[in-house]
Structure formats: C-alpha cells, structure tokens
Amino acid sequence: MEAKGLSEVVWSINIMLAILLVGVGIAIYYIFMYDTWYPNEQVSEDSSTGIPSGEIAGETEGAH
Image (cartoon, rainbow, N blue to C red; front, side, top):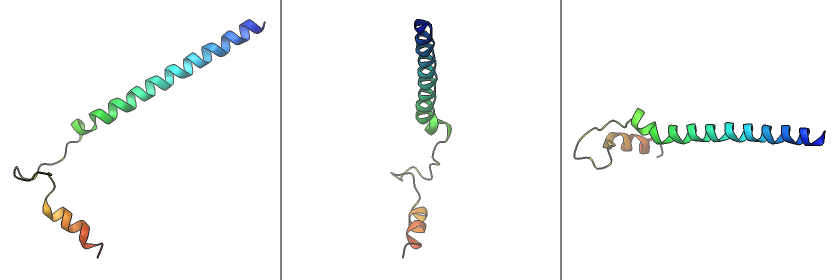
C-alpha cells in the first residue's frame, strides 16, 4: 500500500515541476520578446541614446 502512495507523490511532483518549467519558459520568452513587441521610439538618428533631451531635462526639473 505504501508503494502506491509513494508513486502518487512522485507523479504529483513531476506534474508540479512540469508546470513550473512551462511557467519559467513563458516568462523568459516574454522577457526576451518584450523589446520586439514594444520597441522604443527613435526620436532622431544622431541621438546615441534614443532619448530626446527634453525628457531628460523634464525628469530633472522636478528634483530641484
């Protein structure tokens, strides 16, 4: 009787690990594809950072 109970525990652990691996795989795929799905807006070609100077100045105005 104990062998059957032990076998059920092993199957539940296998199922939990499979769900965990699928979830982690989806999360990693989402992280890697996020930039492809939501690219940054390129303001000008000569800007090396891709961030307009107005946004940087706007962020520092409230700090003073």
